[in-house]
Image 1: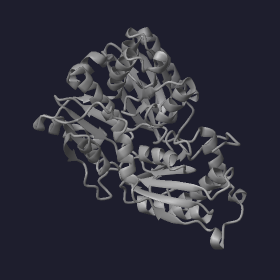
Image 2 (image 1 turned 60 degrees about the horizontal axis):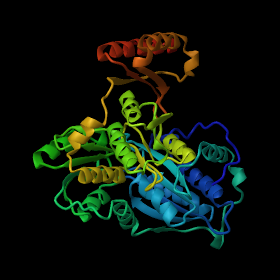
Image 3 (image 1 turned 90 degrees about the horizontal axis):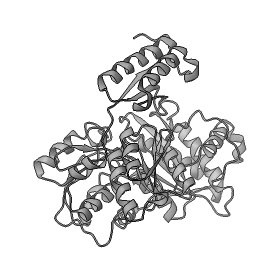
Image 4 (image 1 turned 90 degrees about the vertical axis):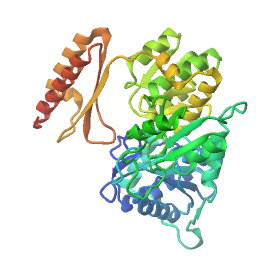
Length: 461
């Protein structure tokens, strides 16, 4: 898809459109209109009826939104391929491998089940750039630009892609080094009752691992509930009780992962990037000797990479911005502390299963347990994150009390720490991240920053 405008976006956030299902904007009416707009944009340079893949996670509202989007696509003469519940990266891969013109994912990722979301991939398997999302928003506001609705034999059709899961499982397995096997390795997999509840256990078991699968009984309302990457404690406990070498905790759409070492300790995305970058550079596989991460990654990652003569490039929060920077610089490793891991040699977006397999491959090649690899990867700087829900959303530069407090804290930290203040891209919250050598001090400063923001917006403390 190519863009013709770059107007500001109001519906699309850092990861698509998201909100409470059946409440604006996540209504079937908007989903139908979005299906029409995506089909129009995807098909305008084609000489065939646009083909659009649709995948979803396990939320109850997915049925409603899926049907509405499919109606919009077919009303524009498009052909819909329904993948059913599959991970977000599965849709990205299948869109490219099946030569589809667009891929649509219905998922609110790590959000609770009442929420849902929609994100769109282009024919190249990458998330749409901001400019294309802006154009789609304009079309939603001016549907006359879409032209006449199709009638008669020009109306499109929808069909199930029966082997969508199998295609994705085969693809993920093929990213694992062919000279390695998981024979004898015990793995705990927590699929968060989400999109990977079937494919995740299959990937590891078919590669030879002995798998203990939890979080694989979705019922439409239990996605992410006390499970997966948001609540890895269950997987941590299972790893210790079963003597597993690794635990894998996915989020609801399986585009991110937290791995768990054999002692039951969580290893986040920063540690994984440090481990993998060091190995890849040693083997001559790290392009540009560079890793791309967001402003939220720990200062310890930056220092660890610098010690290995590896550069760290930081982007705004959101894996899409990490991928954009990677593509621009031709780099092949990036991610987020939260567990979005992008191995661009293998995938066009974050993929929890591919990320986990890369960690296991590193464990096998080094012959060392994950706890040792993670401990040596980086020395963390104390970091805290806080958030506050505020009554209105105002540009940060207009919040004078917050600006003064931020400047004072940054001056006190100097080169020993960082302060990040940002509005959430998916929720009505102001988020704060502070790093520094003294955790008690940065916690107190976080409290002062929150109070300053509340003062600016007249919110109660």
